[in-house]
Length: 243
Image (cartoon, rainbow, N blue to C red; front, top):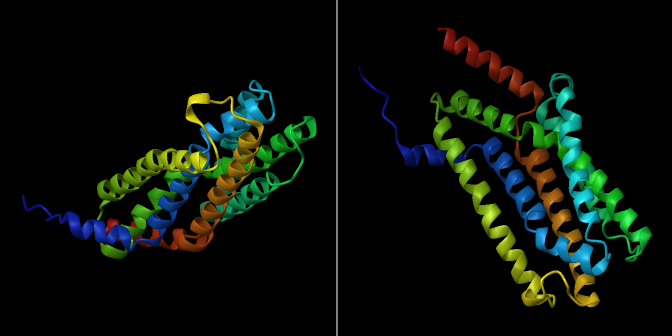
């Protein structure tokens, strides 16, 4: 049988011209750089700044809990508002939560409670995106077929995964360099001087804010598949395939 010719460079070019794929990829990269990149600084923050290493586990749980809370309602939310719209609103909530981390509440109980409340807002905003992030990419693949009349899901998924892995690797490495510039001594581990631990507090706040802002911009302004456009695309693709 005659097989359709595949040009990998053309497929990669189509990915770079696919705003939906770029938007979803940038959002995922920002999430990994912000959250995974700040892991070491967060450990220092709880042990040397708040003096409560055990609380870090609770805060981590709070960060993941919204994802499970949203799971039963994802389909209803998508049907009513659309994936892009709901994720953009969630990212805006995450920006608010990240900005709360800059409040000068000190390292006592008030500061710790304030940090946890900020994490609640950040996690709530991120929860819905976590549930539908791969569905955003599925729509981006359909968009590629809709516009270019060819299915290139393997290339799109591969490039998306590559950039996610790149962020997972470069994010923590780059943050370690910033931490060193702020006085972090790797030999001391999480037991850093208080001044350095305080620097880690502001670094964590900056990383979370960067992550949330880039996610919001990527989903709200770069990812261009809103509910109406997805419905039109799905209808026309179904008709095209039926022929």
